[in-house]
Length: 359
Image (cartoon, helix red, strand yellow):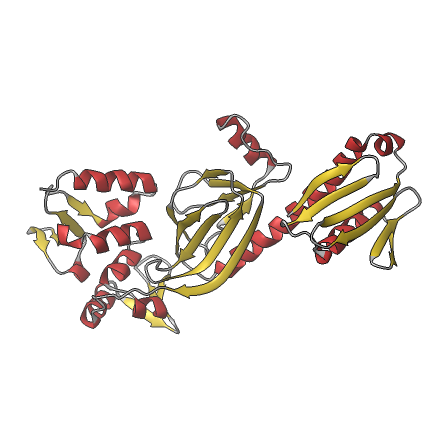
């Protein structure tokens, strides 16, 4: 993203960077062409410098290695702006804000397009130093397929874990002025959108969006595999799950078609082959990675049950489970109850409650 570093009022020079790179000629050309379109100007090259001009304005663009992009104002029809360079700064800030918004919208579109074929993705904040990193996958225990980097994030209203359905809606959006006004009302004008990118994230079954304010956004769409040794990739369990939930394979995907409802994509064949019983069972019930991870880790604290209308709760095998009985508390936890819990912090509190019963 473009950012003005300094103004030299005496020399009439504006100094700026693009994504903190000091000598980015491509960024200089892009900005120069954008301003050209705004003021209906021509471009002439003089050695390693470029003159942008019309009858009223004349700007000289050039870069200096290991320093910055420079714009020298040679002529301007607004005599006040030419005399008081603060007015000139406002003009170029406007160009830069417009350029940054266009760049951000294009990147957001590319992110949404890259994940649109996924029925379901789990997201996780994987790192937060100067930059915020969010990764996404069908199963975060074995890999991620997307990493979104929010540069110099200074405002974060986002759960550590969340999930979304990219093939049903766009997950990432650029905030409108109304969104920014809404955030600032609740957080005492914390958002300064002069050089900021404010992103909102649509989360499955959540009432509100998540918001992140930063100085720029990048993404990597590439599968990154982890070293994870599943110990319960039971072929028999998988066959039983297929029969119980009447799953049908078409191409490289598995679908479910219930009476009086549309055919629904459940998971890909790659997910099915790589995953364990809990991963597959929880995906069918649309449970996020945080819940998968917790029950994988503490499965020894639970017994598995299903319900029979004549005989009540009947203990069963993991693949057939519809309820998890927490041994220490005696709580009978319905998978539908876990599905209804959409806020990560609420699930953390629920886990702490279970752990309070440990003997």
